[in-house]
Length: 130
Image (cartoon, rainbow, N blue to C red; front, side, top):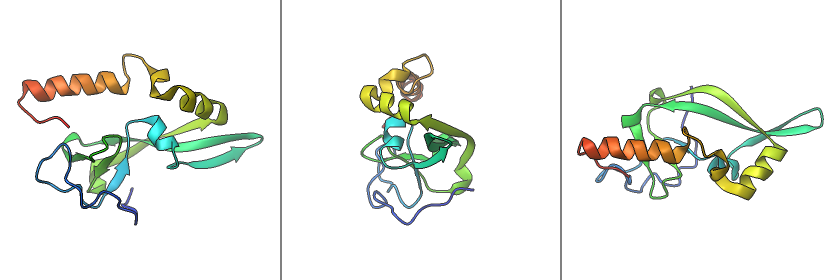
């Protein structure tokens, strides 16, 4: 099970997607590879190859709180986030991602496609979108 860390940079901020609610203390995550690779990963070395390690997680959508910088999501209750995969990026992949940003992963399943579909769903159901 994941637990909230000691550093809670946005805990006192108002959630961008839930007006009137504070982000609070929780587990920080991001839908963007570039955000995660920017100082929030650990490195492991196997032979002569170094990898950055991330956890791929499922999140209960209604438990998600967006910070003012929407690259960061906060989940207050550990029961609402479930790691289910390990993602390894070789040093070559990290260099490519940093050079091109998340756009290198443009495909039908990318973040922008998901966000656009999610926004349409929220709008059609009269729900606020961050």
